[in-house]
Amino acid sequence: MDYVNTLIMAFISVVLVNNLVLTKFLGICPYLGVSGRLDMAFGMGMAVTFVVTLSGTLTWLIDHLILMNPALSAYGLEVTRYVCFILVIAGAVQLVEMYLRKFFPVLYESFGIFLPLITTNCAILGLCLFLNLWEIQDFVTAVVLSFGAGIGFTVAICIMAGIRENLKTADVPNCLKGAPITLITAGLLALAFMGFAGMIK
Amino acid sequence: MAGDVKEINLGRTFTAGIWDQNPVFRLLLGMCPTLAVTASVKPALTMGLCVTFVLICSNIVVSLMRNLLKPHLRILMFTLTIATFVTIADMFVRAYAPQMSKELGPYVPLIIVNCIIIGRAEACASKNNLIVSITDGLGMSIGFTFALCILASVRELLATGAIFEYPILNTAGEGGWFTPWAAMSMPVGAFITLGLLLGLINVTKKNRTSKAGCHGLR
Image (tube, rainbow over all chains, first blue to last red):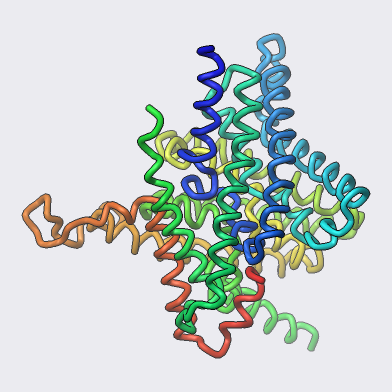
């Protein structure tokens, strides 16, 4: 039961307390770019969740089974860590793209350029690096954290899209229209998410 | 005559990156490091220098191999080139400034997915010769470092009353009048300061607002 508790805590911590978008500034580009409409934001969130779960799991396995394997330490493979990570992510994105084009062509059309851009979404590489940095030793925890990171991104981008849909009818000063007001909204959201900071430990 | 045309192009290419097409303020690229490392000027400057190194090196390599690239594999080649140079930069920072490396954390390896670098490789280096690519990389990275330093100065000044750890305002803790705004060193400060700075720039160049906005936001 203790183990399950740890996993639940890890999930909550990565969704709310250490939300990648609002506390670590990862994935800001799609966060600002695709948050105009709620349905697209949700689709983007789902795509990111899938890719991040897949690539987080795979990079953790590669990192622990090959790169940090004591038997192979003589070759100094850790140098190639970043190159390996980015290759895995690019492959996972390609897979999602092919799957969506086959089974959800409407969603695929509406993503347009943003789908291949998930490859350069910092949230995904960022999470893979954080799994290494936080020294996660346990496979299941790594999977839960990867999945949680995707859910955290979805939560953040959906809240943002909801606010921006209402913002269209608001009277925003001319010079702040577009990116500036979006950033300021994100700032207020980050302030709200700071309230979760005391929840764990 | 052809040389004349190139001269003009080079000058324009160089200055475009610094202001007219400043990657942060105008194109809204590379937002993650912009927001994440600008709590004070020192890490911001380190990040700027790392990006400068990676951007110029990757521009050189991409420009040299531009005739060998297959269209469908080019993004992969760009990414691998960038990842290689980022690994070098990361090892360099870790060896010579371990404290700074710890402070920057994952944001140095995250230069790999910095849209500025891959964007310049795609938009400029893969189409132009070596000299133009280097000039472009230099201009863009100076513009990026400049933007980072401005944002970091504002935030560090309001958060601690100092710039580059050099005290400017008398803080309340030392008997002065200025109460530091703790929020400025937190994520909130990053988002709101950048938002207001972008608004300020829009005021100064009102007629070009919509044009600049549509690159990053739709």
